[in-house]
Length: 391
Ligand SMILES: CC(=O)SCCNC(=O)CCNC(=O)[C@H](O)C(C)(C)COP(=O)(O)OP(=O)(O)OC[C@H]1O[C@@H](n2cnc3c(N)ncnc32)[C@H](O)[C@@H]1OP(=O)(O)O
Ligand SMILES: N[C@@H](CCO)C(=O)O
Image (cartoon, rainbow, N blue to C red; front, side, top):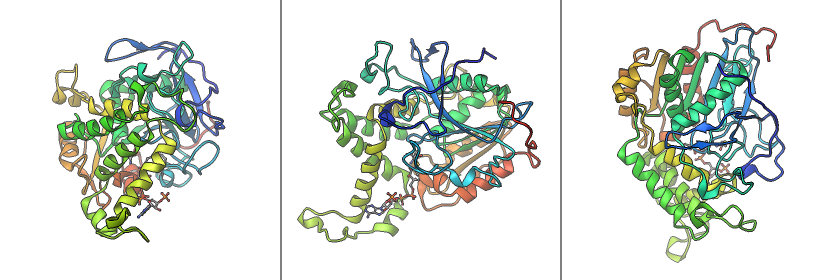
């Protein structure tokens, strides 16, 4: 384990750059530069993170929760205090909940390259200017290496469990394969061993939409006057992505061919489903940085647990964690066969578990009761009792 590293409050970066109070977020400033898979290194990087509960004396009760593409460290808790929304898995974390914070010490970092507190393209490079288009290519494995520094800092030698969905699931998988002796259990939701051509294609269309925005400027837009930036491009990216996050049946059932109230599509108005996509685009543009979106989407496209490890099979066979793999039955972006493959190839995995939902890929965020059941099954029946906190 490396030496403890400095923590403390730094100015938030990206979407929350201006005047956001820290809330319960804290920051880890990485003491050493982060070596990157694609070459080079990220100097002076910081990770934003939140914790709930207390670490016990033998540090055996720590659970790492990893967010999806546009998620953040705010897994639980209300909106406010610098957080634009309530926790994205609020139903799962708290006293008496599946991640019972009277027993478990829950840790959630914002991924490196993100824009909700961790170092990303909107943050300052060593020369004081925003990284912008100079921000390096980050892999899922790089993110995990940064998170390992956080574990070191917190005094967590081994996670009782690492849990994540989608991009968070890719990171949970990388954790289990990179540090087999540091992950006792893993819950891998709605993810895959290696990105598929179709997933790369969807991301590519989103990235191109952002790059086609006249305000993209090769990623060097962070010093534009307030209100300027590749917002239209990011909005189109979110619209494309959101379609892939939901099932055709759900869209049909909810919207069909309805017109948005008071609007006529034959007269410049919108269908309801268009209005719905506009709404999700608008919400994301207000809370997310376009260059972070590109950075993290590229990381997902480059995900390959077998890279440099003799292939997928060999990489998955390294995993020692007691593993539960689950997917959503209506997920067209990360179809169930990808999770079945993981469940079959990971030595400690039980049979594939299926989350039943009409909501498609987003089901792992929405069907919290089913996810809670999986968490309860995965964690030991009698988790560690709460002791006096050691940190
Ligand atoms: C909850 C958070 O966003 S936490 C912040 C961090 N973000 C993340 O972690 C990303 C993960 N979250 C997400 O991707 C999404 O927010 C999800 C998956 C949780 C959303 O799932 P759902 O709750 O099913 O939302 P759904 O897709 O039904 O959309 C509801 C919204 O669409 C709006 N809407 C519904 N129909 C229409 C329509 N015809 N026209 C315009 N808006 C519409 C609703 O008013 C509602 O608005 P609101 O979210 O501002 O209250
Ligand atoms: N809706 C989620 C799903 C991505 O996997 C997000 O925006 O992060």
